[in-house]
Amino acid sequence: MSTKVGAVPGMLAVINEYQSKASGADIAFKMGEKARRGGTLGKAKLGYLNVIDSSEGRQIRTVGLDPIGPLRQARVRALRHRQLHPQ
Image (tube, rainbow, N blue to C red; front, side):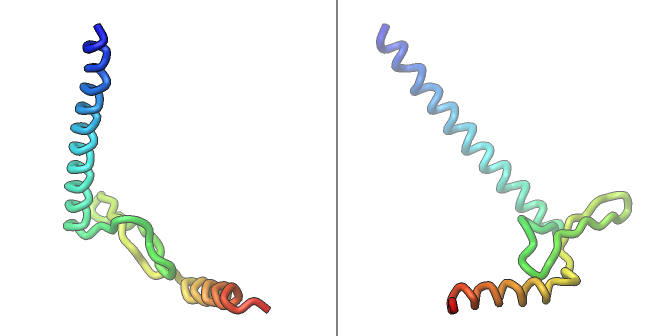
């Protein structure tokens, strides 16, 4: 009986590994398709905004310039300077 009980966790581990690899391949494919269509992957960098543009009845998620981006960048630079050079 101990061999049957010991086999179940091994089988579950094999099934989990298969599902993990299949999910990873699916996500990689979908991210590649999104990039191929011109979509952005992830959050926009400092100074930019994630924007949703509606065109021909479809939503297109892209990146646009942040109107107050230069102010945010200046604030980050000031904070970094203050951390590097405390008074």
